[in-house]
Length: 397
Image (cartoon, rainbow, N blue to C red):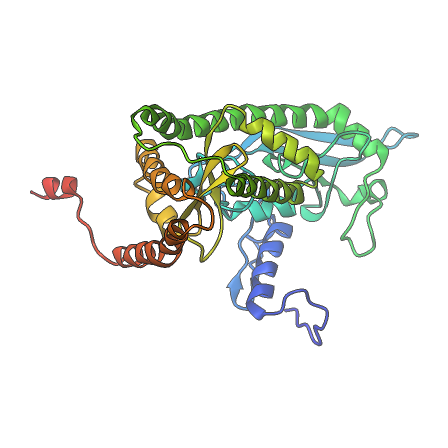
């Protein structure tokens, strides 16, 4: 039993936050020992968690239908340069994750970076983003590949994992600290992993597979959105109202929205705002309409904006409308396309109006103060009502 007294240097302010963090970290660190030696924190059982997500029965392994894919493991003997005697061994495991591995089921069609729609696996992956090193089965450290050997992208490189478990007899080769909590692999260790365990070849293979899968998800997402946008474009020839006049106020509004989006993307990516703005303008070429998702708790369930030369429908992923209806368990490509068409009709009616006009203000007020609360309250009530599907009635009969 470990008892901490005067724990005055903690990052976590509440007992629950500290406990949950310890349960997760200890589950990863001691994953190979927990089945034989159970551990609890504040009466919560510590579950073993494999950050490669390859071990059946471990935490998050079967969170959903997606599974990590293991590559052939390797064993590397490390020998003394002078005597040629084997000093110790390194056991290496590889795993790659499908492009949808870190998304909740209703967001599997979306491969965008970020935590909106992410599942519990993501925090584990991000905390172990790099080459994972274990000593005699206990996790010691996670090390990014040396700059001269490989570039590293934290967002896309979370879709592969490498584990190196070395014998304690190799401590000198890893410059392991006295506290056994940090390592620094020697150049010869990196060379051995490369030459004898195909480290960089396997990482390259896993990266390539991810790119292929990510592109498929991206294309499918674009096709899903294209259906509604194509239908709207086809319907425009029947529209009887004239397009709004391109007034100075409308131009200012479109530019303001464009600048705001460019700054947001620049802050998220660390790229120069001017560069992002050029990329954004190029992205909009030939695409007058777009559907995007945002995460704004307490905000209306949708909004439509003029951003430069593009009209964008923004779906609020925090709203019950999004979670229960738009991306709900019974949603389909066709149902989502129909919802997008409906909301575009409402949204375009709003932004067709002159900025700061009374009618524009009416739409803005209704959307925020009337429609959104009404929809949210009704959907929360709907969750408590038992609905019998007609197919269930037929089978019961």
